[in-house]
Amino acid sequence: MTTKQIDYCIELAHTLNFSRAAENMFISQPTLTYQIKLLEEEVGFTIFERSGKGASLKPAGTQFVSFLAGMREDLKRAVEQGQNFSATYRDNISISLMVRQAVYFLPEAIRLFAETNGDVQITPVFQYENGVESFLRNEVDILFALKEQTKQIPGITAHELFESRVYLIADRDDPLAGMNIIREEDLYGRTIMVGGGSPPALKAVQNRLINSGKIRYFNSPDHDITLTNVAAGRGICLAPGFLNDHSSQFAWVPYDCEETFSCVLCTHKADKRPCVSSFIAVLKGLYREAVAFPL
Image (cartoon, rainbow, N blue to C red; front, side, top):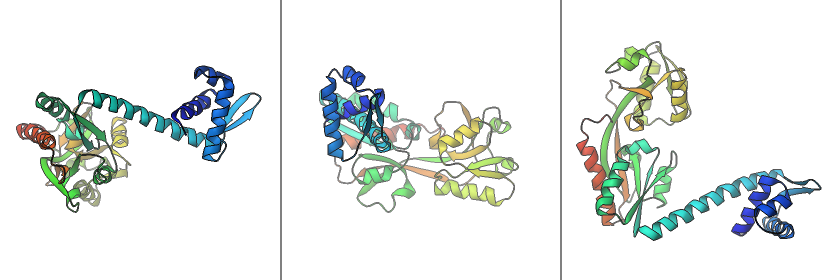
């Protein structure tokens, strides 16, 4: 299977017309027909149903073309990244985090790091799930994680970054938004969203509230859906401070509890590159100086 065959297949799936697809790809119709036939013979199933009116995707073809489109986009990004890297950088450091705001000072750290390491590229990799697995497969160099997640992982170094506390997230017009701190009794009678992959410390707080019998709750599958429900006025939620994007869309009010989240950056012990140590030091320095910053 060649990249040209992939492009021909995607274009034909878009136009469902051999003549128009060939014209758009700047080839003859017989050439397109032949290349699609070769592709179908290679994969072992029919992608397109031919008719006098043109072409239509078979069920297996629909799934296959969807995969091809994603693969082609990944390949395009890989080529672009390779072009950027080869032209400017001598090394690359990839850092995995579930959302950009998890390491709030990452953009500032990249800027400061570039002042002395301008030939080293920093590549953020956003992985809401499977970040640890990706790190263990050596697909990324640095992993943002909670300290509790790293205790049983061999061959790594965990660099303590900051302690994050629990916050209440509410709509700006919610009466709770004007409070300086939220206590358990302030939430009685309210509806709280729980679940969505909450870390153990947050689950402990949620369970105490649920066991009080004085709140309503429902399960939310992930943080983005939870925030959508908060914006829709369906409820409020508790969340780690490291998820705060500081956009001012919602009120983030400290919640009165002992639980916190120990946030760390993990590196591979075998990775002895000075640039990695330097970048970690820049990030740790930024968080050390941000004593009054809400985390």
